[in-house]
Length: 312
Image 1 (tube, one colour):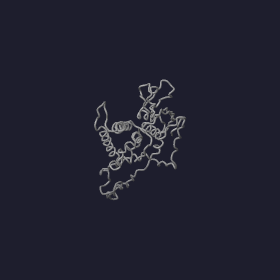
Image 2 (cartoon, one colour; image 1 turned 120 degrees about the horizontal axis):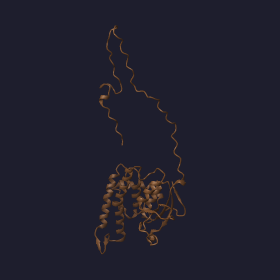
Image 3 (cartoon, helix red, strand yellow; image 1 turned 90 degrees about the vertical axis):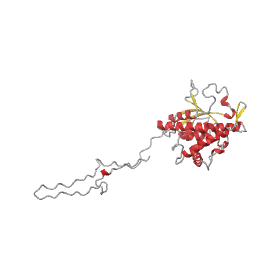
Image 4 (cartoon, rainbow, N blue to C red; image 1 turned 180 degrees about the horizontal axis):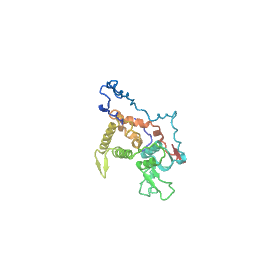
């Protein structure tokens, strides 16, 4: 069972096949020449042929000497060369997931502001005077917010893919090839569609309607909450099967792991049925393994709004 938060937050290459015809003789081991019978001749005939020369391959040049010590590592990247991120953060599940991503990725400087979502400040007219984000947090400014025009993005994928592309370190969380990036994006899409969105919809029914029924106008929709839970559990059963022999969702730690972990553990105390050690032990072990990563604990802390935070 992973930690919970007291405050509301949101190929092996096969060996080459050697055909029998390549062997010198069927009864002689490979690479060993059989005995050669020279023809008999009298003294008046021509002299016997010379013995066969060795056919053992010889290197054209002596093998290079291995260095006695490993090559020096590249010099560290100066911190002043880290790109500077301007982020408006909030006490949300997406905020937790994005902070976790930044700590795992590293190589950036963060200048942050903070909005208290408990006070609903993010939906004040003075804040959402534009229609491109509708009060959604966190928000990443693509330049200094004092510059005009202001360019900003919201959403886990948009923010984290941008950070993954600008950080100079080599800890890529969206992969290094187009194929890897496509797989990770697809995994995040399926997790959002089949786990995260139904989970938060289930939670909203639970908090907003004690009967557990969805109310549309004046007519309740029976069994909606139960149907959402069944959908989530069906997906988790598939995740349980896929995790066999794997440490992370796609084998290697990536942005999809950050997304699922952050969006689930932010409110893990609200859906204890999500973790079933008997039915889905691999899923429970997976979340426990994610909780043990050092950067997962750093993500609990909000950014210092009084200074620029360097994330190595």
